[in-house]
Length: 148
Image 1 (cartoon, rainbow, N blue to C red):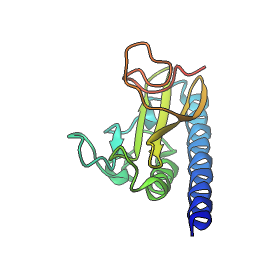
Image 2: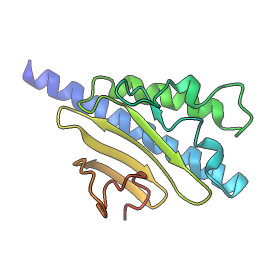
Image 3: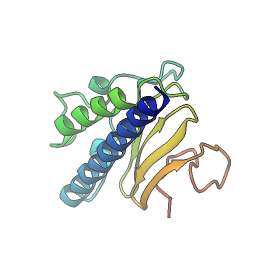
Image 4: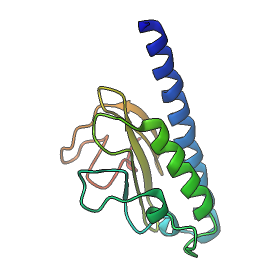
């Protein structure tokens, strides 16, 4: 049974990495089209965080009637897939997206250790410990976009 559970976790983790990588591609397309990531920042930064006052759903984050970006429908669908994959994570929320004119990050936490899986405008960072300290290269209060 332990081997089966380990295999399921690895499968979900692989799927999470793939969906986040797809999100990174989507944001790159947004930047290529508009010269900014702001259209996919959404009206809220958090989805499915019951302990965060400003959290919402993927439909609130990426409303299908929005004209902020032509990629809203794809962002909405990817958000929902990421939430489905990472549901039940240790941190209590599943997706945080932040974007502005020149930087972006999309991140999710997964597994009992609550490790951070992130794609940012500076690269990809998978499986890092969540440490919220000033100057931390993994998470700096504005996302993981500064990852090397």
